[in-house]
Length: 373
Image 1 (tube, rainbow, N blue to C red):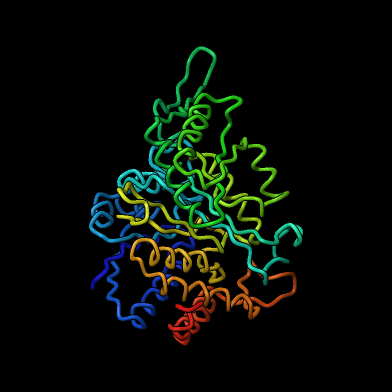
Image 2: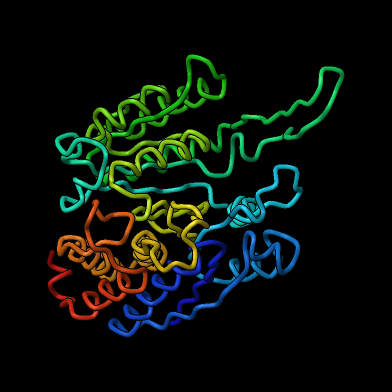
């Protein structure tokens, strides 16, 4: 069977790390007999330079005609003009909207071999394994009005935080569904003491929880959640929250693992059955890191793990995904590090070398062993 994957390298380190993810997918294809077809498109700053827009129509068509999308990163100082009407981030927001990618999954895991790479005390990190489910197409980033203007008192700006019942209910149901296959706990994060949108969110969360009596529901205000992520991160299982809160919390949570270079994500579309997804866009949560672009020192693990999520969720290839994840853990356990993970004085390897080490383990690992593990 042929599987088409749209590749959107983007900007900064995006092309470097995405290439390593593609190499791993190609190895998986050869090992398991899958026919993966890769087609590349422009997005972000690279698209602005070539076509004057952050999201060309050709890229939209490419993604809609593909079975899944793998993305690198967008943005950089070259296009970082606050007065510009065209910005790289518009490409990312736009493709999410075009593909109806309403649910963003960001797993946060702490590897035992990397506990000393985190600034958080090792004893606090024991047992950390959470999943943040972020609403992706509503809230401040999309709702109208959104504009800047000048009046008698000077410059002003407005962004609107708006959610409707359909948007809130579907993301909460998504979180509860996922919690059933985990520890059975959902933490709904809001700001219900201040925001009307959060009060609606909390009300609907209570209604949805009645449909999942085996799942525990906990309400936590966003400021308290930010504190608890550092004080007691192991207390979380599935966190469900709105767009802006989820964006901030997952960047904070990346500190637990030791580096944003380790964390993948999946953005998923509207579906009739939450266990089978029609379309997914997969990307590392790190940015374009323009300060290290082209130096060959970026960590490709998040992109490689994003490829593993793609296999598991969009293509239902569980064994293949687990093979990649096992290879990553084995590489880390062996002490191999990229610069972002290396402690002071430790040697580190290049982007390509890290990808090669993971690839070698993927190729040599026994399929039966992974299936049984």
